[in-house]
Image (cartoon, rainbow, N blue to C red; front, side):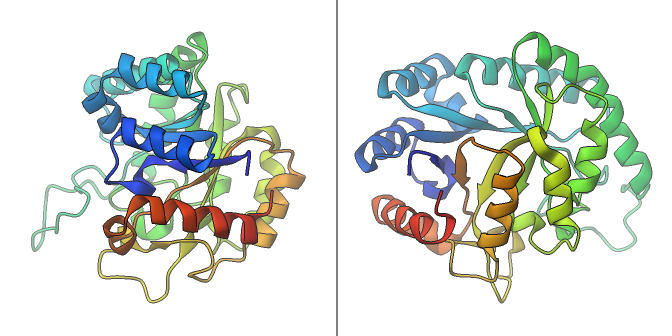
Length: 281
């Protein structure tokens, strides 16, 4: 249990202060924070709350959304890097962005002309932005963690869909500067995932766990479940991550309307039990 980390959005109703208190109450030693919640609490106060509670910040979510290009996205990511440094976060999770003009959760109009459908070009813009951001992060002691997302999110959230793509993008940089996220929800389906986890080695910056529910709910973003409630084989994935040499925090990140509606203390107790049963680190 010493490696269990609570991603704040698993207990989405809790503020930073409440989530920190919940971790202490349940004996959880690490927490993954979200930028908007940190902003509401205040960056300095959030850092103090975590520090005074003796917790680790396993990750800060999120940077990214780089595919539209431009100075505004780079400036926001530099701010995210500075925030991660202030929180002494283990990494800054990078959700790189989807096709320019596609807005998450907003439907396209018939024959929509505002979408740039050049997928290869979008991926190239991610590479160009990373070349700007990686040195900035390195100077501040922050590790960027590229997160490949399930292909169903390629259009609106991440043009990186496989661990292989993320590793290819990370390779030009030192591993302590640019790593990758292994999120079970996003990679379980990939026939090459075990080989790519082995390839990743010390580039694994974060291991995030939750289950993939079946059937997928109407809002696919909320198709994450508590481990054991879906179809993922955690034994093989956790074994591969361990064999690759990862010894860091294991972050439980669940987006699910029913979970969010449940008392957060009950959720955290259930997460701890399933973590012990199925992750077993």
